[in-house]
Image (cartoon, rainbow, N blue to C red; front, side, top):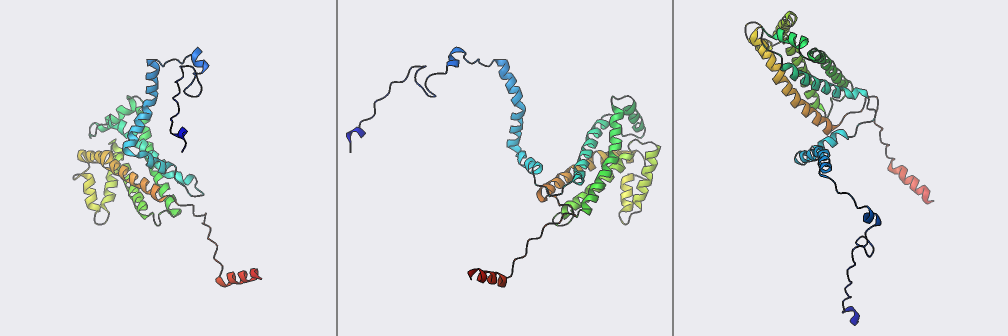
Length: 292
């Protein structure tokens, strides 16, 4: 063993500020001549304001883990041949969102009374700012939503997307179709004019002709011996509270199964069959030929 290894190396004298080299040595020349300006309080406040939405979203994401669901939903694999027919479900969802938003604004001015319902609708159309536009958007949007959900169900059926393992999602879609028709039927009476009154009378009577549950369903919708104030209140509650709540819950389950199970390819695109394995005798013959 050498003695030099036991003697510690002499301690170097620390360099003066501005001397030496490396990251801890001399400062660059531009820092000496033009030192960086310190950010003012106004700039710090502006930077915090810009970062506030990002920090808020990060705070929410840490506690809900929503980014994982959104990533799986937006960046999932889709089958080859996906076309515009696959957007009918999203279009129906967008139509429902429009109906929900416009319905909330209409409910702020609507009065569910047999003596004031029609007057409140006239007030919305004639006096409220953009009332006629919102009412028209809600009125015609209901027809658009019904058409879109029928097209979506037709695409699902003809593309065979109701088969295994998507049977449960098909059942949920059928229930959503029934709820959409119920929401359109109950909303038709709310203006309570002559046309909506007699159309609702005909619809309730048609429901009463159904087997077994028909008469009970008719009595439930009528809410009395004849169509009147109680009927209007019941239709308003079903249209505003019961049906939209059920639709929102089923849409959540529907989207979860779509993300979980994926979508089917169009029927005109058939999967390529794997090549059949060669018989063992043929493999042995080819191996013997190569040995020769």
